[in-house]
Length: 273
Image (cartoon, rainbow, N blue to C red; front, top):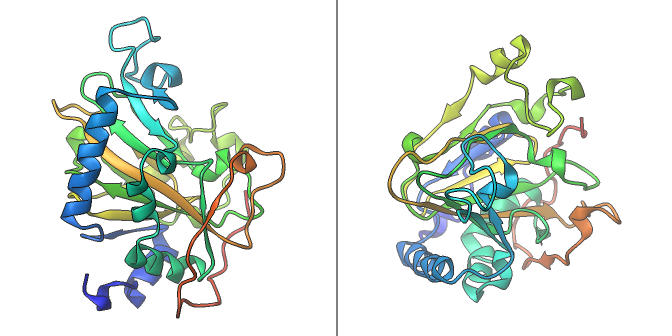
């Protein structure tokens, strides 16, 4: 990769702070994406735990249970870092870490308790993920984490691409605007006005989305005949540890190589709502 592309531009940094997400085109190489796809196909052909099934979640469009038609449809291959060294290669990729360093500072830690997976949005039985903030399910000292979404192939409206509500990471949203499963309620007029600002974008293999842990996002069902694959990881600054005894602290984490030249002062983040 061109060294000039190993860090975010000032415009990209400003966009992330304003919107809560940015797209970096072609950050991962075509060869890495091909290797990932080969690995994922092999593991889906002979899956091993831990895996997550669509039927386990009960989201709209998912099979009723594992005994129903499509009940064996896998949604996520979990604990990706333990599955193959290829994931560590990507997790420690210098251009990726350089971009993250611009947002979180030079001392990065990879959480293994959250995301750390291959998303497999499969045809026919994939479900719709409602609007949510990842941090509502996590427990850290501060809402200061960034997730990395790597597209391994085309991501479009018809196969369930991501959508975001720009600026939602900077809002204070009361508990009553979420349902009992912590999804953002689409029946409330004040929420509908916010959802109307939604943004989405097509992705190609190698494109990466960085998004803040408080940014509201959703993903639709896959209405095509081909599975959509994505690799998802989440990073935090070293001084933002998980709360003891929480699910976020249930697995060891990986400390990333220190990023030379990354800013020592990070932008202020909002407090947890």
